[in-house]
Image (cartoon, rainbow, N blue to C red; front, side, top):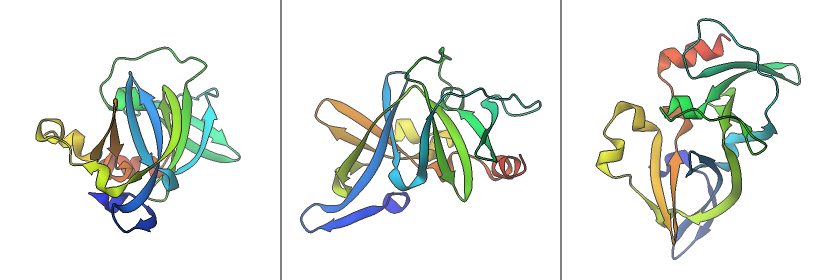
Length: 164
């Protein structure tokens, strides 16, 4: 479970400290390893590409590199929403490939103890599409779902993105 997360330093009583970038999608909060995030940008004009999966919004040119842009709402089967001033693209490294993920808002960088990560309930992780959930963090009034980006796409999808 913790192999997808990066330890920051050892904390003898509570396990390792982990840094995450938290973001929002449809009023839920998610987190990814801070070292996977290359940058966070405002929504640029996205160029549509024909014959792509439904969750691919298109591509952008980021300093000379063409990056596929994924709608996290569509990928997770959530209702679509209009982009607003909080909408961001999180450019992340997914197994050596840069990809942009559209999120509703980026919240903060947080540090947690590895011991705070709880396994996802079986009801949540029962589906094949839910393999990308690394665990859940329960902090007082909020739940944060940890994502494993490398599990978000099938082998064929990864081949498709590397060819874009």
